[in-house]
Image (tube, rainbow, N blue to C red; front, side, top):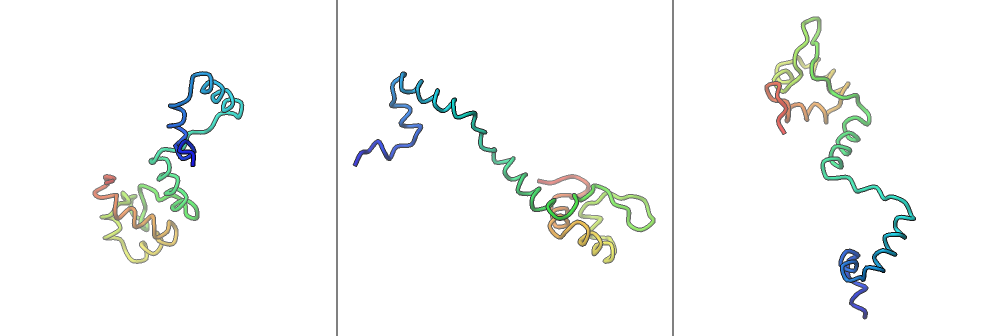
Length: 112
């Protein structure tokens, strides 16, 4: 068995001579630019958007309960609102977003 076949491409590139590296770079450049892989934050954000915003609209920061004034939509509001309002929010924005508000919006401040 050839041990060089089991080395990573980065390790193989370290062992190549300059002319071979130039040839390899030219070949890769001819294929076109390769998009860099998304970093962890982008990957998580895309997954959240797909989960939360795929079927429901995004949850607003403020909500008007009945005919009263607009209130900040946070965990305190969700704990004190009527069951009809909570049902409306669950139906309109989904269980995942309501749970996210309970976890992250404490006293009007986002907690991550």
